[in-house]
Image 1 (spheres, rainbow, N blue to C red):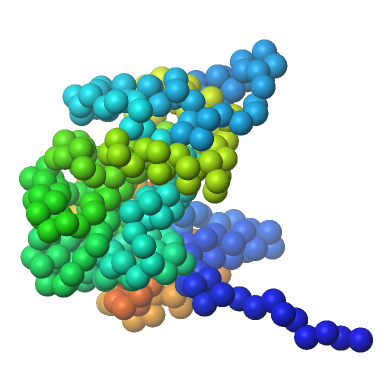
Image 2: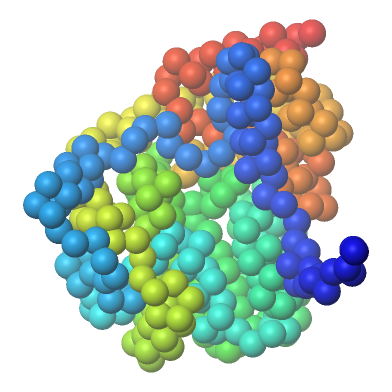
Length: 387
């Protein structure tokens, strides 16, 4: 006898898919069928975790170190190591007690949003931007206030944008940004932080691509104020995406709230990943060699894409993406990326992932792969566009 199901899906769970991950799955299926695929779709280094990270784990495992729970805020030695990173990179002294180790930056965003905003709060984001921002906010019943940025402002928000957006409870910025790779200079970052402070707007700075810049070093919001939340990760510069370990730096008054949320929602970050992260902090020589490959790949794409009809390319000052206009080639980025994958074996991400209003005319290429892969991808693009 059949029974009517009493299980239903919640309204807030009905968020848009993450198209980059959908493309990654489609690419896997294409590869499974026996075809070679050049992966330029996902923001993931093609390199493994640094040797110092895996060696540190191997030593711990061989010594029989227990991999049980750590404290919810993360291992004290790792928090101290992250504080030292800020001293080394930015000349800023951070109390390790303000640092929270998380299960990737995604966990940090959830903790930040839950701790700072009640349901219905209005949080501003730049479009184009990382899709998980708006999807996490939506799943938490928070209102996303879309700021339509342009190439003229480096696809970054300005105080004028915020003034025009009406009443706001929060602002999230990213520098370097995904998908554009553009950065906020120290003065622009300070202007935004000051505007937020003067208008009672919580300020969150996504800095997960710090270390991956191709000119000036990225500025941190911590140089502007202690009354900000900064989120970072071992995923990108440290080449540890699948290890799921990140961190956040918060004002002292937020620590106990974040700790209680972490205890109940996540228990603690993965212990083995925290051990690997300790090693990664000592791997600068290897990681800078990775960045040199990305820098060369970036130049190759910046040279190759305009003649193929990809226009209005974002500056790509950091991260490992090229975000380009597609209008001379197609007005349907989703269809174009599907054909590019199935006909040419190149996986790229449609701009609709990052800008649901204007993204039909843009595309993102990731260049975080080997020189040979990027050169192959460019040759395939040239053949595909030429047909």
